[in-house]
Length: 215
Image 1: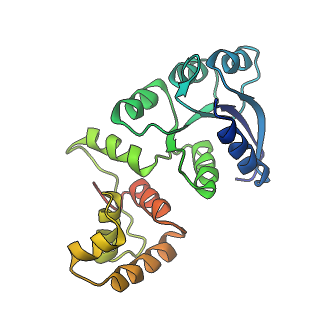
Image 2: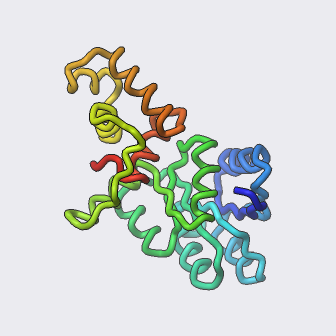
Protein backbone atom coordinates (compact mmCIF):
# COMPACT_ATOMS: atom_id res chain seq x y z
CA UNK A 1 0.00 0.00 0.00
CA UNK A 2 1.38 3.37 -0.98
CA UNK A 3 -1.61 5.79 -1.00
CA UNK A 4 -3.82 6.65 1.97
CA UNK A 5 -6.84 4.36 2.17
CA UNK A 6 -9.97 5.92 3.68
CA UNK A 7 -11.85 3.45 5.88
CA UNK A 8 -15.48 3.34 6.94
CA UNK A 9 -16.42 1.14 9.91
CA UNK A 10 -19.83 -0.47 10.52
CA UNK A 11 -19.50 -2.12 13.91
CA UNK A 12 -21.67 -1.93 17.06
CA UNK A 13 -19.15 -3.32 19.56
CA UNK A 14 -17.28 -0.39 21.17
CA UNK A 15 -14.24 -2.54 21.94
CA UNK A 16 -14.02 -3.68 18.32
CA UNK A 17 -14.52 -0.11 17.10
CA UNK A 18 -11.59 0.96 19.27
CA UNK A 19 -9.47 -1.94 18.03
CA UNK A 20 -10.07 -1.08 14.35
CA UNK A 21 -9.27 2.56 15.03
CA UNK A 22 -6.07 1.44 16.78
CA UNK A 23 -5.12 -0.70 13.78
CA UNK A 24 -5.64 2.29 11.48
CA UNK A 25 -3.69 4.60 13.78
CA UNK A 26 -0.72 2.23 13.69
CA UNK A 27 -0.63 2.29 9.89
CA UNK A 28 0.49 5.28 7.87
CA UNK A 29 -1.67 4.06 4.99
CA UNK A 30 -5.07 3.90 6.75
CA UNK A 31 -7.45 6.63 7.91
CA UNK A 32 -10.88 6.04 9.50
CA UNK A 33 -13.37 8.54 8.06
CA UNK A 34 -16.50 7.27 9.81
CA UNK A 35 -17.49 4.74 12.45
CA UNK A 36 -21.16 3.82 12.80
CA UNK A 37 -23.00 1.17 14.79
CA UNK A 38 -26.19 0.94 12.71
CA UNK A 39 -26.86 0.02 9.11
CA UNK A 40 -29.06 3.08 8.62
CA UNK A 41 -26.42 5.54 9.83
CA UNK A 42 -23.71 3.95 7.70
CA UNK A 43 -25.93 4.02 4.62
CA UNK A 44 -26.51 7.74 5.24
CA UNK A 45 -22.79 8.31 4.66
CA UNK A 46 -22.98 6.47 1.35
CA UNK A 47 -26.10 8.30 0.19
CA UNK A 48 -24.52 11.63 1.11
CA UNK A 49 -21.73 10.94 -1.36
CA UNK A 50 -19.16 10.28 1.35
CA UNK A 51 -18.25 6.70 0.46
CA UNK A 52 -14.75 5.74 1.68
CA UNK A 53 -12.33 3.56 -0.26
CA UNK A 54 -13.14 0.52 1.83
CA UNK A 55 -15.64 -0.39 4.54
CA UNK A 56 -15.05 -2.90 7.32
CA UNK A 57 -18.45 -4.43 8.00
CA UNK A 58 -19.83 -6.56 10.82
CA UNK A 59 -22.83 -8.70 9.93
CA UNK A 60 -24.85 -8.79 13.16
CA UNK A 61 -25.97 -5.27 14.00
CA UNK A 62 -28.60 -3.66 16.20
CA UNK A 63 -30.87 -2.63 13.33
CA UNK A 64 -30.26 -5.38 10.81
CA UNK A 65 -27.57 -7.14 8.83
CA UNK A 66 -24.35 -5.75 7.43
CA UNK A 67 -25.23 -7.64 4.26
CA UNK A 68 -27.83 -4.95 3.51
CA UNK A 69 -25.15 -2.27 3.80
CA UNK A 70 -22.78 -4.25 1.56
CA UNK A 71 -25.43 -4.69 -1.11
CA UNK A 72 -26.38 -1.01 -0.98
CA UNK A 73 -22.78 0.25 -1.02
CA UNK A 74 -21.42 -1.98 -3.75
CA UNK A 75 -24.50 -1.27 -5.85
CA UNK A 76 -24.06 2.52 -5.70
CA UNK A 77 -20.31 3.13 -5.32
CA UNK A 78 -16.88 1.73 -6.09
CA UNK A 79 -16.11 1.28 -2.40
CA UNK A 80 -14.81 -2.12 -1.34
CA UNK A 81 -16.52 -3.97 1.50
CA UNK A 82 -14.51 -6.28 3.72
CA UNK A 83 -16.47 -8.34 6.24
CA UNK A 84 -15.01 -8.48 9.76
CA UNK A 85 -17.30 -10.56 11.95
CA UNK A 86 -17.57 -13.40 14.45
CA UNK A 87 -19.74 -15.42 12.06
CA UNK A 88 -17.89 -18.19 10.27
CA UNK A 89 -20.84 -20.34 9.22
CA UNK A 90 -21.40 -21.33 5.61
CA UNK A 91 -24.64 -19.34 5.16
CA UNK A 92 -23.13 -16.06 6.40
CA UNK A 93 -20.03 -16.45 4.25
CA UNK A 94 -21.91 -17.21 1.05
CA UNK A 95 -24.62 -14.56 1.65
CA UNK A 96 -22.03 -11.83 2.25
CA UNK A 97 -19.97 -12.74 -0.81
CA UNK A 98 -23.06 -12.96 -3.00
CA UNK A 99 -24.09 -9.48 -1.77
CA UNK A 100 -20.82 -8.08 -3.12
CA UNK A 101 -18.34 -8.37 -0.24
CA UNK A 102 -14.74 -8.25 -1.45
CA UNK A 103 -13.38 -10.39 1.38
CA UNK A 104 -14.34 -12.14 4.59
CA UNK A 105 -12.36 -12.10 7.84
CA UNK A 106 -13.15 -13.23 11.35
CA UNK A 107 -12.63 -10.96 14.34
CA UNK A 108 -9.81 -13.09 15.72
CA UNK A 109 -7.69 -12.06 12.72
CA UNK A 110 -4.41 -10.49 13.75
CA UNK A 111 -3.74 -6.79 13.29
CA UNK A 112 -1.20 -7.63 10.59
CA UNK A 113 -3.71 -9.84 8.76
CA UNK A 114 -6.35 -7.10 8.79
CA UNK A 115 -3.93 -4.52 7.37
CA UNK A 116 -2.67 -6.92 4.70
CA UNK A 117 -6.22 -7.93 3.79
CA UNK A 118 -7.25 -4.30 3.33
CA UNK A 119 -4.30 -3.84 0.99
CA UNK A 120 -5.15 -6.98 -0.94
CA UNK A 121 -8.79 -5.97 -1.30
CA UNK A 122 -7.76 -2.56 -2.63
CA UNK A 123 -5.43 -4.27 -5.11
CA UNK A 124 -8.30 -6.36 -6.47
CA UNK A 125 -7.84 -9.58 -4.49
CA UNK A 126 -10.46 -11.19 -2.28
CA UNK A 127 -8.89 -11.97 1.10
CA UNK A 128 -10.67 -14.78 2.92
CA UNK A 129 -10.08 -16.14 6.41
CA UNK A 130 -9.21 -19.87 6.61
CA UNK A 131 -12.61 -20.71 8.11
CA UNK A 132 -14.51 -18.78 5.43
CA UNK A 133 -12.31 -20.22 2.69
CA UNK A 134 -13.27 -23.72 3.79
CA UNK A 135 -16.92 -22.97 2.97
CA UNK A 136 -16.03 -21.25 -0.29
CA UNK A 137 -13.82 -24.09 -1.47
CA UNK A 138 -16.56 -26.58 -0.69
CA UNK A 139 -18.74 -24.84 -3.29
CA UNK A 140 -16.13 -25.35 -5.96
CA UNK A 141 -16.46 -29.10 -5.62
CA UNK A 142 -14.43 -30.71 -8.35
CA UNK A 143 -14.25 -27.51 -10.38
CA UNK A 144 -11.10 -25.71 -11.37
CA UNK A 145 -8.79 -24.97 -8.45
CA UNK A 146 -6.18 -22.23 -8.36
CA UNK A 147 -2.81 -23.23 -9.71
CA UNK A 148 -0.44 -23.91 -6.88
CA UNK A 149 2.70 -21.89 -6.46
CA UNK A 150 4.63 -24.01 -3.96
CA UNK A 151 6.77 -21.14 -2.63
CA UNK A 152 9.35 -23.83 -1.99
CA UNK A 153 7.15 -25.75 0.46
CA UNK A 154 7.97 -29.43 0.76
CA UNK A 155 5.23 -32.08 0.65
CA UNK A 156 5.60 -32.54 4.43
CA UNK A 157 5.26 -28.80 5.06
CA UNK A 158 2.09 -28.70 2.97
CA UNK A 159 0.82 -31.73 4.87
CA UNK A 160 1.37 -29.90 8.17
CA UNK A 161 -0.54 -26.88 6.85
CA UNK A 162 -3.39 -29.08 5.67
CA UNK A 163 -3.81 -30.62 9.12
CA UNK A 164 -3.65 -27.18 10.72
CA UNK A 165 -6.35 -25.93 8.35
CA UNK A 166 -8.54 -28.85 9.45
CA UNK A 167 -8.19 -27.71 13.04
CA UNK A 168 -5.57 -30.11 14.37
CA UNK A 169 -3.15 -28.92 17.04
CA UNK A 170 0.64 -29.28 16.92
CA UNK A 171 0.44 -32.44 19.06
CA UNK A 172 -2.40 -33.94 17.02
CA UNK A 173 -0.59 -33.18 13.76
CA UNK A 174 2.55 -34.88 15.07
CA UNK A 175 0.49 -37.92 16.04
CA UNK A 176 -1.20 -38.24 12.65
CA UNK A 177 2.08 -37.79 10.79
CA UNK A 178 3.84 -40.18 13.21
CA UNK A 179 6.62 -37.72 13.91
CA UNK A 180 7.75 -35.82 16.99
CA UNK A 181 6.38 -32.44 18.01
CA UNK A 182 9.91 -31.13 17.50
CA UNK A 183 9.75 -32.19 13.85
CA UNK A 184 6.41 -30.40 13.41
CA UNK A 185 7.91 -27.27 14.99
CA UNK A 186 10.80 -27.43 12.51
CA UNK A 187 8.34 -27.67 9.62
CA UNK A 188 6.39 -24.70 11.01
CA UNK A 189 9.52 -22.55 11.26
CA UNK A 190 10.31 -23.30 7.61
CA UNK A 191 6.72 -22.56 6.57
CA UNK A 192 6.75 -19.20 8.35
CA UNK A 193 9.99 -18.23 6.62
CA UNK A 194 8.87 -19.31 3.14
CA UNK A 195 5.44 -17.65 3.37
CA UNK A 196 6.69 -14.58 5.28
CA UNK A 197 4.13 -15.04 8.07
CA UNK A 198 4.31 -15.04 11.87
CA UNK A 199 1.43 -17.21 13.06
CA UNK A 200 -0.42 -20.43 12.29
CA UNK A 201 -3.55 -18.53 11.24
CA UNK A 202 -1.58 -16.37 8.82
CA UNK A 203 0.13 -19.45 7.38
CA UNK A 204 -3.22 -21.16 6.75
CA UNK A 205 -4.63 -17.94 5.30
CA UNK A 206 -1.73 -17.55 2.85
CA UNK A 207 -1.73 -21.23 1.86
CA UNK A 208 -5.44 -21.18 1.05
CA UNK A 209 -5.19 -17.87 -0.80
CA UNK A 210 -2.28 -19.18 -2.91
CA UNK A 211 -3.86 -22.54 -3.59
CA UNK A 212 -1.07 -24.42 -1.82
CA UNK A 213 -3.45 -26.66 0.11
CA UNK A 214 -7.00 -27.96 -0.22
CA UNK A 215 -9.42 -28.90 2.53
